[in-house]
Each structure stands twice: as C-alpha cells, then as structure tokens.
Length: 580
Image (cartoon, rainbow, N blue to C red; front, side, top):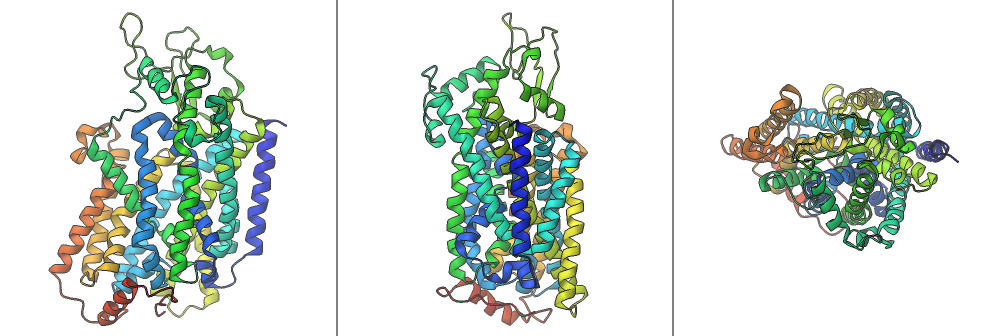
C-alpha cells in the first residue's frame, strides 16, 4: 500500500473509533457535559489528561523546534514538563476540593464577584482561542501532506470531527475519546522513534540512543551533529544562543502557564474525590514522560537525517517526500547560484574563499516529526501511523479547549449572569451551540494562524500564566486577596502580555529582536513578566482596598471559611460543592 492509502486507512479507522466512543458516551446532563458526571477513574483521567495536554505542539512541533534550535529548544521541554509538577503540587487537589465546573466558576465564587467571573471568562476565551489556533494548524498540516489536500480543507475536516464528538459527548465523550487518542498518539510517536534509534545507533531505546554513537562512523551522535552544524554555518547544536534571563522567563511562563490553563484544570473536576485528583496527576506524568523523554532523541534523529539527505544534494534527484512537502509550501528551494545543488546553510556559512554563502532551502520546523519517517525511508505504514498520531494529538487538545469555551459562555455567562433561571435542558442546548460557534472560529484561526504551532501555544501559555495562575494560587493560599485585587491583577497581567506579543509579532515584527525586548525577554517568555505584574498589582490593590465586606454572590465571611476548607483537604473526602 502507498503512503496515501495507509494514511487514509489509519486515519479513517481512528476517526471511526472516536465517533463511536462519542456516540456511546454522549452527555445527557450538564454535569456530564461539563465534568463527565465527576465519575471518571483516575487512570482513565490521567490518560485523558495526557492526551489533552500533549497537543499538536508536543507531538508535531516540540521535537521540530528542538531539532532546529538545539539547546535553546530545551526550554519547551523543561517548561511544559515542570508545569505539570507544579500543577500536581499546588493546584489539582485544591481545585477538586472546591468542586466547581470551570475556572471562572472558581474565580467568581472565591472572589464573591460576578465582575471577577466575567473577567475570568474573557481571559479563558482569549487563552483558549490562542491555543486552539495552533491545534487547528497542526490538523491542516497533517491533512495537506498525507491526504494531499489543501490546508484549509484539512482544517475544515478536522472541525467537522471535533464538532461531532465535542458537541455530542461533552466532557464525558471527550474524556473517553482522549483515552483512545492517547493510545494512538503514543504508539505513533514511539514506534518511529524506536525504528530510527535502531537504524542510526543500533539501540532500540531512543532515550539511550540519543547519547550513543552512530553505527556507521562510531562518533557520538551529538558530537557529529555539532560538527555538521558548524561546517554548514549553524551554531553548535548543543550550544545555546538565548540569554539566561530569556531562558528562565520562557521556562517560567510555560511552567506556570501549564498550571493556569483552563482546559487542563477542568480535567481534575471529573474525578470522584480529592485523592483521585492527585492520582490522576501522577498517572498523567507517567503517560506524558513516555513522549517527552523520547522527544529530544526524535529531534536529533530528524536533524541528522535531514542534514545527511539535503546537504549539497542535486535538487532534481530529491526523493518523493521532498516534492510532496514542497507542494504544501512548507519546504521551498531557491537556487541562488544556479548549480542545481541544495545549499542548506546557516547565517555564518562561507565558501572556500571566505565569501558568505546564501541559504537556498527554507523548511517549516513543524514538518520535522511528520516528515522524519519518510526522510529515513521507514515503511509506509509507519508514515501513515505518524499522520494518525499527529491528528489525535491536535484533535484531543482542540476538543478540550472547545469545551472550555463552551462552558465559559453557557455556564459562566449565561447561567451565572444573564439567565440564572435557565433550565438544565436549555443550558445544555446553549453549551452545544456555543461549542459549534467556537469550532467555526477555531477553524478560521487554524487557516490563518499567527505563527508556527509551538510558538502559538507558547503565547497561550504565557497568557494563561499572566491571567489565571496568580488569582488561582492566591485564591487558594491567601484569605486577604479581595475581588478588587483579583480583577486588577488579571486585567493588568493579560493586557501587558497580550500587548507585548501583538506589538512584536504583528504591529512591528521587524523590531522583534533581542535588542528591543524588555530586559531581553522574548514574546514567548513575556508571560513570566505578566504574571509578576499580576501578583504585584493584585497584592497592592488588595492592601489599599477594604478587607472583604458586604455581599455580591457570596458573603466574604463564608469565602474565608471556604478558603480554609479548600486549603486543607482532609483525607480523601468528597469535594465541597459550591452553591448554584
């Protein structure tokens, strides 16, 4: 079978599985739609959480960005992994103890303010749409190459699949679909990694193969890659070019962004007890580690294979995979010197006389994982499997994000603000309509994305870090923080972060260089500064405004008691339920 036939078969079977699960587990109540009836087993929830979190950025883009940036790309690996540890220690059990449906629900109840709830809803919508843009772009990339269709049409197909199982099944359907998607994506990621490790180093474990020697040359793989890089005018693969402050800022933004992402936090509302939330996080870390420990190895294998394949190769003799990716626009070749050979070089490349050499090959880093099996000439079924895995990763996270958007509109705005007397059936209809509208907007963003997948997702994490993390962590551990402080903190944090990103990425992209950044912090890391501003503003405003008093939603005395109950989870008892 050809690559196209294998891809169509494996993708078709996986989509049929997802739709079948959605029909079997469709939601029949708002509780099932929002939080799967709070009856998901911790093991299943851990697997679903891993799939929800390991998005297209993890599957498609993370190894790609590491393969291009080398050491500098490790910030994504450290930040996203460390964020889950932070989530396990500081947030998951306490939020499950609270027992609400959504993050804006927590903010509104904890800060006894409908205004705070609305601000949280706006932040959730902003963060989620930024994040979902990266997922839909990933869907389009996979479809455009492996099913040989236009990227826009690929996004539309992905929209249709997500719409079906997200709108029909809600969180209940999404949870069990994500369990299946995790199985697909982890199998699709590790199988080619094992193949590549065997081919290059003779060792079947990629994590060990990364530090081993090449079979052909006997040279350690990283040493050889460093040599290739320097010969071609690139920086040494294992050397970093970012400032230490920027590395710390990006890592911090990704870490606290992980702990503040609403589609991840909501997963811990789906288990029966507080203890189950902790167990879920533990399982999620195990499942995530299977992919994240393999990612650096996949990045190195991909980079090595690419350099060996394209360096000084005749363009006319490039294999079929090159032509197919070229048709998508994600690889382009321009023969500057007219010799017909591909010169893939870095900015510092020079010829034998010391004259600069122009690069002739442009490669979108998002294709590295997807193209890797073809570059290494692995069996066609492996190529099709990777395509199915990439779609599973993108669609699983997209579904979780769409549910956050749906819940924010139908539950937090409609039920909690505009129509408190709405029936459960009416709220469920509103939730499904909201999800449908969100799918359409997400599709548009996937067709017109603001950057490559990992970059877009990094922006979403930065926005989450600057908006949600401070008010959630202070809401759990500080009785003094009041509604004025929470609102001012969220608005200041997300405004600063969003304005910085928009200016450097859209208003004046020519100025997006280290010399113009504040304190040398890139747009990918500005969320750390936004978070710091959020903490500072929230604390200062709370100190200069009255101690919580009066009523708006909840009596502040009751809020202080609520904080005490959340902060000290007693054993594995049932979660406290907020009043509706």
